[in-house]
Image 1 (tube, rainbow, N blue to C red):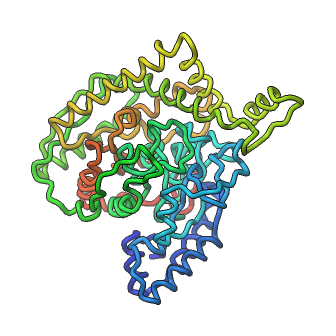
Image 2 (cartoon, rainbow, N blue to C red; image 1 turned 120 degrees about the vertical axis):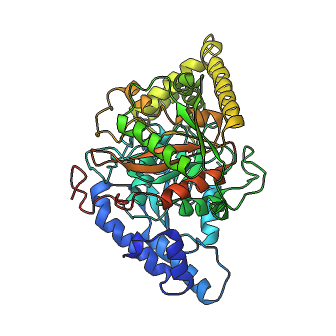
Image 3 (cartoon, rainbow, N blue to C red; image 1 turned 90 degrees about the vertical axis):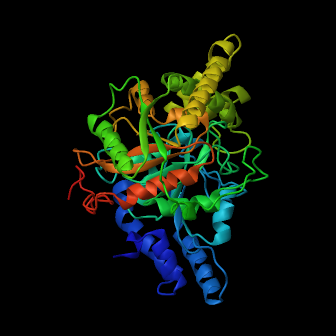
Length: 494
């Protein structure tokens, strides 16, 4: 087995016992990137020299007997909307194509402090607005299980990097499903933490009341270990939670006896693939055999989630993206007066989907419409949060599909924004409520594409999610493939 195929815990053990060096581990992933990247195009910026330099420093510290973090020397990839000081951070947008931030995001500071080599910055939908990674200003990332299909979005590049073994771990951001949906489409574990669990400082904002940074991994333990590093209060982010960070890895071994699981009943399941619905029942039956109490749960106001989200998120985007004017930083479209310069900068610098959402948000916030649209959407958000509070009085955890279908073809929904938005229908309400949610690989569809199920817990109960996910991971079908086919041929088969 190659180093790039091993788990994070295996890599950490091998490095700590000095059977392999961090440089050797990092080089294994860099070699894998050279092999796979031309097929899938997951990275916007490659940083091989930077990665090897960090790995070499970790090796020296290890030889000196320094006390190192378990993640020291374990490389990772980072979504390109997370600020990396001195290194290009583009948000996959022409308007920030050459932007080099002067500071690090808090999560990147933590990563550098423990000595995790950065393999590169990953492709995404522009400003995290999309569900397919087709909205990047640079190129489309392809799903390695079938090169004609999307990897999901907006964190598609990060998901593909982990799925193909180009990185053992990756960071994404999730506003309304942007970690969980690509995790489902690519056969990974992807966590959206509780809002405030991980600092947003240095995450280039899309919708500030919804955005969260979270991890991708090939198994629950690796995912939990990375969250342990990232979680915690940050004085630079006033919305970050001041409470103590629990031991997520150790909590995975706690007994699960008597846990109550609510199977979410969607009132309208017309667009849900029957194989995915069957998988929910299959996993629920598996948990019931373990002694879990299983029952259905209705969330009466969640039907309004899609409409509320696509008023709240664009409204906040309209406000956040007002800073891109061509004056202070980023692309400048030129012009013979300031009005022309603003118009050309934003007209040429932003892509179609970003413009669409800015216009929706600006309209919703405009005089005479604020009460009818944005304010009403915020009231619906409160009702949705109350649905979750009611559900968690009866259940310890909720389960449902991560996505209504497996990955769709590139271009299939590109000309129909509403159809694209509907692909997020399972993810949005968790984000509106601010609760943690983990996408767990659930099997292979008959079309040879992976898909996931979503587990949701009360605020700051991520450990509960990892605990249940670890049980499912240990009892998974050993015959199901964990990685996409090495050939990356069209159709997802060798």
